[in-house]
Image (cartoon, rainbow, N blue to C red; front, side, top):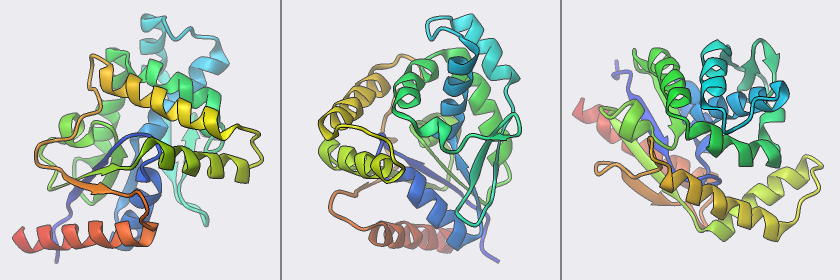
Length: 226
């Protein structure tokens, strides 16, 4: 029986992490953990409760109190915040811009990392985010780092949001992607960084299926080693 691996998929916003982690987890029969969605949940909770993004102590208390879990559905995993489905609410442009500010708070990251490690400690998981291979599970057997141009990622996000009826400008979306990159890369605590042993895949111009097959081949090769 193949070993239950920890598969870490990192990369910047819009590189395809969420979609690919869901697809790969489904094929492998693994649990999919969208760590980015967890930070988005904290950001949404802060927005709804009026906690200022500069209030580090308030955000720390909030991150320790929220209950976040993932539940499968016919259309993929749903994200529950305190037992309420917020899968769509955490994907708005406002929450997207607020999230890196919230995620930059060390105490918030510590609280989320603790939950993530507990979820994935036994293996058989695919985790996606920005610091999975570097901070959350540095000993993960498979580390993937997805990239794509900011323009490509902006177009993807624009298509996703307009399909949901959100009125958004393409140029603004690309600009927000670049700003999100800047915040993720320059934050002091757990910045977005490619682990030395991660395998980089440029998804620009590739289909989801093409990237998925590459990742599954990497997992298969690692299972042979294990």
